[in-house]
Image (cartoon, rainbow, N blue to C red; front, side):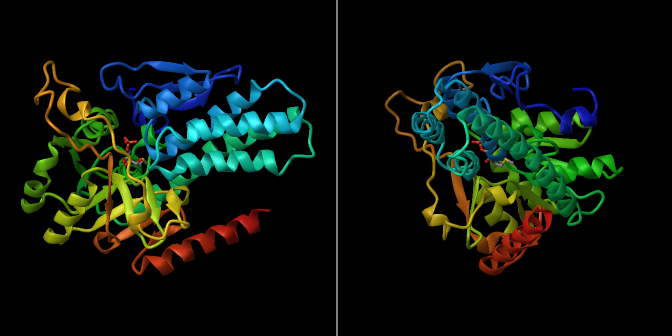
Length: 365
Ligand code: MRU
């Protein structure tokens, strides 16, 4: 990755040339190695998502959409019911790989609708429609990220200090990213930002991925430990916080990487705007509040052993390792979507965002 465009247009998830496997960048190897993996079986796909080889809500959805197409291709039958039974089994299996990011089930449900609404068509034709839908899901994500980047950039000023948590850049999406999108777009337009990237314990997405993407893209980035967010805010070095999201409830509560809600509480204390950036594919209007969001619990060894040469706690020490937390809507200054910035009260403004989306969909038909 040598230029800004190499960073913003990285091919992190795609189909291979034969369109019979999904190719991803193994994000667990970054920043030290750029390694591509080819995923051709249900287990390969499940493991890649579960182990965060592909991660970030939109990227997981895109990988699952391509993945379910690849698996559907392998179903050898001309009988619709036999085809659908196997498709559903594969779909449910992939859907169980991670619970919090709604993009996973959102993309898989979209793919399932292609199957169920075309029952009258030959299976081969349904497979072709699935291929088209998976490509459309990725193309839409590119458009959404670009629009989010524009709306997000309009909230910032040249020279601003920005704090971000986890990774919501091009690696987590397709093109530009969500929370990092405005920064890359601003850079393209000659603006300068000074970014503080929380390292994001325990899996270090901030250190391994965000600081890598920003550094390679020529954006000034300073890596900090998560517990340093308060001091950089107190020093007056942060003018806005930008974070991604994994599921936004209908009332504006937003699940994102563990530690995000702490950043929001600090931002409120220091009077710094706290923005959540995400596409409508991450907003779950069927989920009333943050309390209804399932939070993924992960292996304690991620805290005790991962990245250390020796364990950093006794074997018998108990650990609590939730992968996400929910930021209360009261702490959020705005939710930046591809249809504009939703502001409190979110129960109303998120409905307006979806009304705009529906209008645009009708207009394009
Ligand atoms: O566990 P991860 O690394 O998949 O968590 C990712 C995040 O929390 C991101 O902020 C979120 O998915 C948004 S990506 C545009």
